[in-house]
Length: 315
Image 1 (spheres, rainbow, N blue to C red):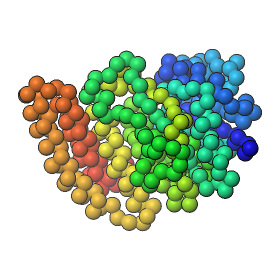
Image 2: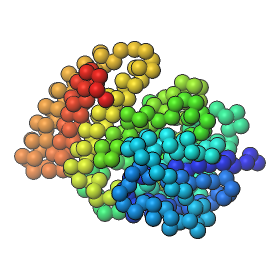
Image 3: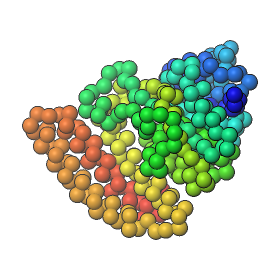
């Protein structure tokens, strides 16, 4: 039987010690050889007791190591973990995921079955859960990734979440790691950070796989189900798509102007249309639908904000 690879699990975290504690309860009990597993908690300037939360697990089967990364931003933390990692495989997760003891073995199976080392990354399933309850209109924005029903490669247009994503460490290092202009920075919910690393891996000839049985539960607390948060997430996601497209065009040595101009014009009409639909639904007594259209309006506003900044050369 092929042997298991050595693994580094990297968890960037910012100011969420209670959630991190629950994540560590699962990570430190993984059914995996202790000599082949290290857990790195990359503390991105947390003002809470993140260090103490990590210290509480020093007698666990897989004790985590606390690393302070002073440069603010989730991708600075991910790159720090990449530089520190000793494992052949580096697995990135969020600080609010829950998993069973066999999760890591399931995530490693594609790598174990790949002696030719064609696979550069493997994503596991991510299921959102709402421990504090969830309004129906918010639930409609979330669901399983469900990229495929069995283990295997995924299409180029399918981009898995970084909440449960493994890379061959050396392949990720060779292709440049994570884009520091994307990812969360403090309270900013800039997403889309997975696109760049996966795109560059594919360009280098690597495959990206999905392992549906390697599932984690992604906790969505009450603070993430408010209209204010969902609007902000939609706005920042649109901004991140603009930055991601510019990065892609820069790598491909082509102009982004045509794309940016067409998206700007299109989102003017979308913003107006969605805003009118939000008002109409509110008037007819459908507040949930009104909130959905307001979120879509705010997403279009994110494009309208970021595109002029991009054209002027601002990040």
